[in-house]
Each structure stands twice: as structure tokens, then as C-alpha cells.
Image 1 (spheres, rainbow, N blue to C red):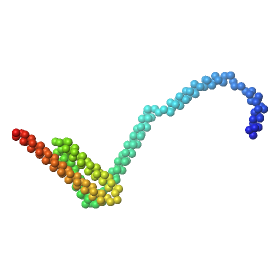
Image 2 (cartoon, one colour):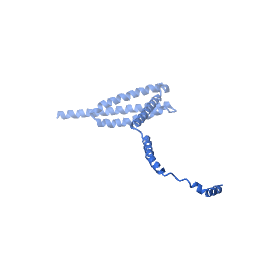
Image 3 (tube, rainbow, N blue to C red):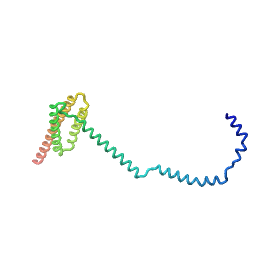
Image 4 (cartoon, rainbow, N blue to C red):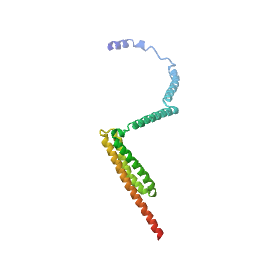
Length: 188
């Protein structure tokens, strides 16, 4: 079939070549070129974003992230475990030791104003135990043996209480020793 088409074109070539382009064809093409260039520039400009649009998008993203963060925080609070439901006696002990630890920390802060370096060392030790307590507390909700984890939390608080008591004792002895040295220097 292509052979027949070729033969037809060869036979009628003169009839195909009789049409010549018009003389003003190139001048019309040249006149349309600036208009096409202007359209292309407008299309490129339309693709760029205005500052107002970018700011609106940024504000929307920040708003969505903020709302998501609030939902996340709310879900974190609702996952807390009712200690009394696990073991009422352990829950009472946990509350008792937690309040003791808090009271001793407050007392330690008040006494430690005289020697901040010593307080910094003491608070570093307590921070380690406190991070262990917080880890136990976060594991409590997902633990298969919640009573055991609660007992470990209570034991951690007991140890914190003992350590804080020892630290308070050391600070009191240290401050007493300072006072005694001041009195001895005054007497001389």
C-alpha cells in the first residue's frame, strides 16, 4: 500500500508543487511573536506565588499543627492510670511518698541557697532517680503487671526520700560546721 502512495505522489508531484506560500506570511508570523512572548511571560508570572498567598498557607499549616499538638497533649493526659484501681493500698503509699519527696526537695532548695554547688551535685542524683520514676510511670499504662510497676514506683520514691534525707543531713552538718568556724574566728 505504501508503494502505491509513493507512486501516486511521484506521478502527481507537479500538482502538489503548484501552491507557493504567500509573500506576507513571514511578516504576519513576526507580528504574532511578541504577542506570544507576552502570553508566555504572563503564564510564568501566574505560576509564581504572591506573598499574601504564601503567608495564608503558612498560617494554615501552623494552625493545623497547633490543633494537632493540642489533641496529642489531650490524649497523653487521658492515658494516665488510676492507681487506686490497681491497688488502693499502693496508691496511698505512692501519694504519701510523693508528697514526702516534694517536701524534702523544697526543704533542700531552701537550705541549699548557702551553697549552690553542693545543691547542684545533690539535685543531679535526684534527677537520675526522678527520670527512672517518670519512665516507670509512663510504662504503667501499658504494663501487663501494673501492680509490680506501681510497687517499683513506690520503692523508687522511698529511695528518693532516703537520699534526700541524707542530703539534708549533710547540708545541715556542713552549714553547722561553717557556723562553728565563723564563731571560732570571731573568738580569736
